[in-house]
Length: 607
Ligand code: GTP
Image (cartoon, rainbow, N blue to C red; front, side, top):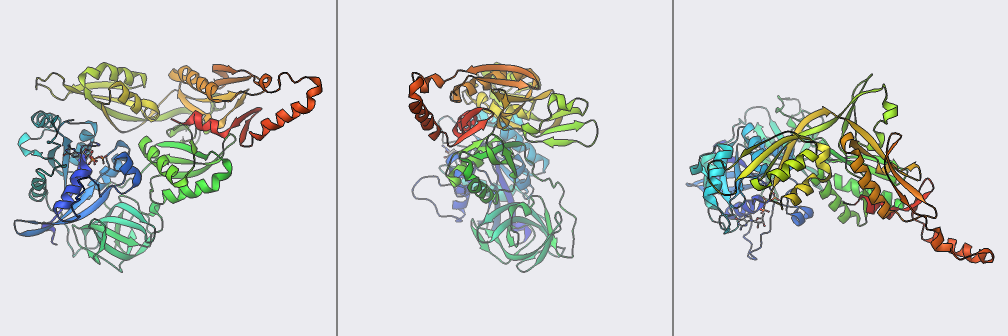
């Protein structure tokens, strides 16, 4: 295929607006996959089980299609992008391999927070954007109104908008035509040195890492010796092909083409997204914008039964082979024993991983409260990051040593019907939001319920706890939310520890903002009081910041229940009772003098 017969495009959309369904229709229409006779939408591009269960696309997946247009065969490369804020960087990097994007908007829901963020990413990359209103078959669809909204939000001419139903297939032919007619073909010269852009990777149990590449110049062939601009490592190309939608070997890929290569890469972490590959001994200028993914949410993962650690670690290792964006470090806790501290891109990423781990490892796991990476600026020496609250400097320790503490902040945008405006701004304020601003999406359309975009800046740590859930429940699910990284900002933070009978429980430490410390302390202490079983003696449960106790509950003793009424001569019976009690304690953890079943932590820390 010469470049002028190739189109590289993506579908970008807010979650659930129908990306995967449209992708399936395009694959069917071009004969790439068989049409399902069951009438059920089996989405081919969503490969992972969790993705199916949750109906979200986690990993970008790519497929090539052949399509005849006006008598000429075209090669259409569809790059499927993930649909959630945690994966914004995956969207961004897969778009680097495209020249155009279908901006899909649900005709009953209208423009949502992510429609706007993905539009901006695509626009920044200079892509040709084809606006598409989907789900016009729904009785609740309001295509005219939504077309006006698209015009307001993106400055797009309503006459350029395609109206389709990915479900019934109505208008989908038009989509293929628009891709061919409106998206510019890629450029590239096969006589220049090889330059291939690595935009995704898959993991195959037998062949190891499969890298998805877009060829910018030159030709890549099976047997080539190549090298990475980023790592300088050398590889032998053992297989080259296209995704159709499964891998089909072609032995070579030409400029403008998108496909896969297998080379001797062992771990996904070697396939750096955004990297540039070149022929060994013929270096090229790397593609701009290389940015390693960075973990923004951390949590400790422990087995409920501590003797299971090797098995848990094994499962974690196996799962992370396929997901290079998760960072792993061993962690040991006096309360929970041996575990791992994992870093994720966001909370959804963490939830998805948790579910995959539970499926794979087949046992309960304890996950500590999520935390963001805090930046510590010492009075002497260089800045460093802390991703485990237990390592956060104590007030006393840090006197004179720590100049400043900073936390990651994000710029957030929320779209919702205007009647929720008050609720949402209250919620933002209570989550330390700043620079709250808003504008109307349906300005001048004269409809009863207009929708409003609220933007603000807020700490990421406020989002990783309960912001999503609260936003959803306070707006009956009508609000959509998105955010992007906005750097670090000085903050008044402190480490909060929980004490049982005067002894701290390391696994429960939190970093909190001073303004919320009392409220958070009280809530956790109450929860602990509810979950921790009574002991033979009274146990004070305290939340403390430094030496100051901010909340307290007292767990009353239970000894009386077990051996009450066993006096003097009943010594043997008393011993037996205590013996019986021990039986049930084999999996107990000791925190100072307090005995806790590991399950208690599971209850304390579960969502
Ligand atoms: P993520 O991968 O989670 O971002 O979602 P998506 O954008 O890929 O959406 P998906 O294709 O999974 O569709 C979401 C839901 O909308 C599914 O239940 C689809 O069956 C449904 N859907 C998609 N397109 C249409 C359509 O044209 N009409 C109707 N009625 N339903 C549709």
